[in-house]
Amino acid sequence: MDRDHLIDLFSEFGPISLRKMFSGFGITADGVNFAMALRAGIIFRVDELTIPRYDAEGARPFQYDTRNKTVVVNSYRHLPERLYDDPEELAEWAREAVGAAKRAAAKKSGVKKRAPKKVAKPAAKKATPPASKKAPAKAAKGRKAASKRKGAKKRQAT
Image (cartoon, rainbow, N blue to C red; front, side):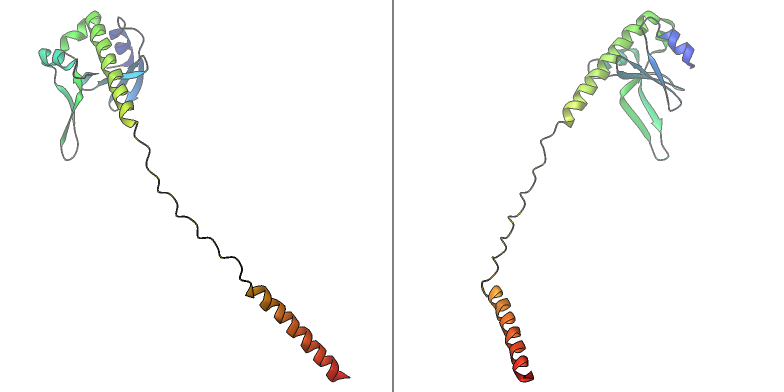
């Protein structure tokens, strides 16, 4: 589907934004991505409140193949074929898909709120022992010894 055809199809719904995605477009309205238009058709976001309506129409979940398996994405369903010719009813389904996308976003943001990690308290620093009283005394003794040697050398010289 091309961009102009999608805009016409959603004309009863209201303004949408299209963004290149995979083999088609991501469809956004009211700040949420609620649908995809791919080679496989139009796929709407669903949740536990809207899935029964899609089941009643026989709409299958979105799926795609990888090298190793087929991935089924139960949170997106194909739009029933009959809605491609009925922009008014498509608009109703699109509003429900926007609601499902908003509910999913609200759940997702609630999951991200976790308790902060407990940080281990740093071990208390060992207090460095005060300089021993002997250290300055040793230095003083060293100076005294040096001055004694100088004095001894002076006496020997005379």
